[in-house]
Image 1 (cartoon, rainbow, N blue to C red):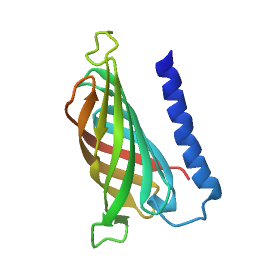
Image 2: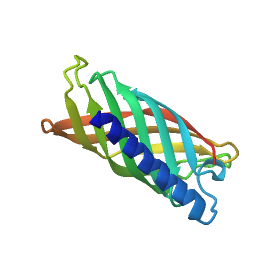
Image 3: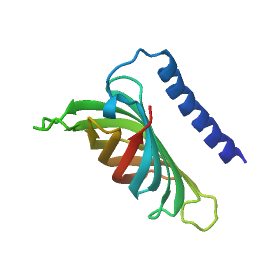
Length: 168
């Protein structure tokens, strides 16, 4: 029961931060087609749903709710990312921001045996996104090395490709 209340609290916090930014921030032209909040699919480890919301022109929060086939666990990931630079391209239809960030990962029922083993990790996502100028779409690739801290300390790696549609 506690796991569900933590998940709910995390979702409410993320939605509140994004809503606060949407209501009180001055309009600015950033994100795909100048939209700030998107949702889509993430394919890799883990595989599932992803959301991202820009708080400023370069700073964003993103989250992944997914299933890890490698760890056999339901996985929640939350990151703060920063678009460090736009990779120069000779195209007017898209931009290529390179981003890095920091975040955390929680995996429930690692091993898939119903033993309830929970893992927690710190991660550092690094990636490149293709953000279209005339369409509210972003396609991205990222890797996120990290360190698992619960129940044991060990190297942790996640990553994948994905796409998000930006709504507002």
